[in-house]
Image 1: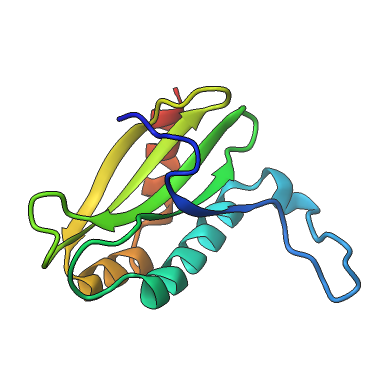
Image 2: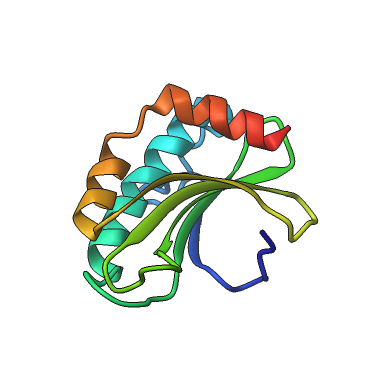
Length: 136
């Protein structure tokens, strides 16, 4: 799958800033669990707010740099190409830094409600394994 720069409406996480503007990165900087949890939290919120119940829409993605690599991981919600009226797809992908090629894996297909449930119930340990596998 080829990803074009700017195709996805996405967010990238580098840390959380407190009210004084200081970055709260400490150990989370290298903790893939932190990035997966935060990415899925934001993806669920964006899916709720931006994905229509039916029809086509611009895909949304949330990405983060995979610790100890130069690759980016992405969680993506998009409409199903075969049945955009009724179904959405949830997938995870990895893009090597400096490339526009993405290795991806489809996690689920269903209605908006089912995709939201799947985002909230993903096994984080399985996501770590899958992201590391795609990264290699």
